[in-house]
Amino acid sequence: MDEDQYLLGPPDPAWAKRMAKIEKKFVRAEQRQAGYVGAPPSRRGVRAAYVSGAVILVLLVYAAVVRPFGDRPAVAGSTVVGINGGPNAMGGIGSNGPKATSTGSRVPVSGLTSAGEAAPGVGGDDPFSGTPAESWHTAELGVAMPAASAVGSYSAAQVRDGLDLAHRYIVAARTDRSVLVDHRLQTLENLLDPRQVAEESSVATGPNSYLSPTLLAPGFALAAPARVTGAVTVAQVEPTATVPARHLAVQANLVWAYPLVPHSDTLRGTGNLTVLHEHLTLAVFPAAQGSATLRVEREDRYESNVDCAYLAQGLIGLPRINDPSASPTTSGTVPTGTQVYDPRTPLTDGRTCR
Image (cartoon, rainbow, N blue to C red; front, side):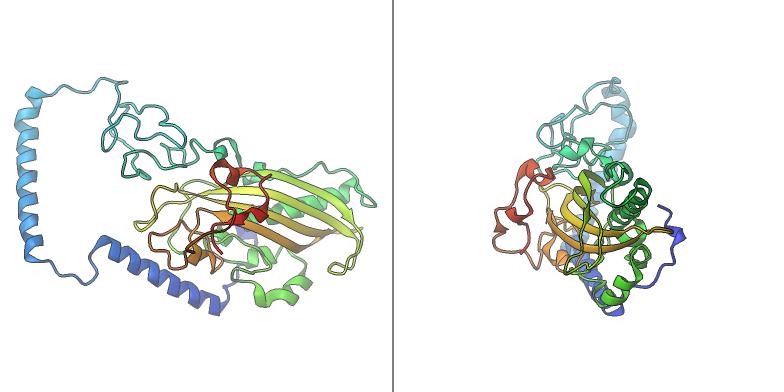
């Protein structure tokens, strides 16, 4: 989708203020983690710096004089020992994965746990390695719409037009940079029936937004494009109390995997994939002539491996070590292992945050 085709409007001011406050807390947490917030160097720190300098000097002398005579270069194809030992430090979830080889000086180390093994969802160049999402597609292909054939009183051409509009909305709500990163919600509003935008504009932001966008928490970025699996169906629906006109109901049961770049205060050992499972219902109104119109009718979801404080603001981010909103216990029976990646897992099984 070409995000430049839309006029991007500013986010809600009140919500933007809350976002700024969250971002300030994030920056402070990063500084505390780094250990330099207002802390002048102590004598012990200065003494340690001198000792470190001496050690570096000795190593340089060793490298210049001793190593050329005492060490042999690594043979291409030999095993590279991972951090904290062990040849399989870069394996994915469920196994140690393939052994790394000395194909150059680049050694990927992001996402390593204290044991020197990759956390789930982190392995080499593929953040999805070792997870069910490894075989999924990105949004454009992964959100597979049903065949555009006649449905009820609607022709194949009308159904095709409606499905195309629904597909564009789903992909934009979950992956468009202007939404995901910049939080420019007008990208979504431009795809909706103007009457719904006018009626519900007061709840465009926050966790209960009628637009149901996916928004990254401040400072987070994707390590790779999100991937998705699941199914989309379409059926003609007669007028109801909530939608008093005949229309096409486009129902999506999708599971999304977002590979996030961790922060210094990210909780380790849970992996770097945030998973979102949603049941989304869009009401599409085909037109006899012209374009179809679209309304967001309902969305239910659960998120896994997500920070609860961010989620309470309608944002997604990896869990922090000191998540201020983490529940003492989870609600319901939370899916475990590969269940969170399965579209057949009921949403009523619970969620990681209350």
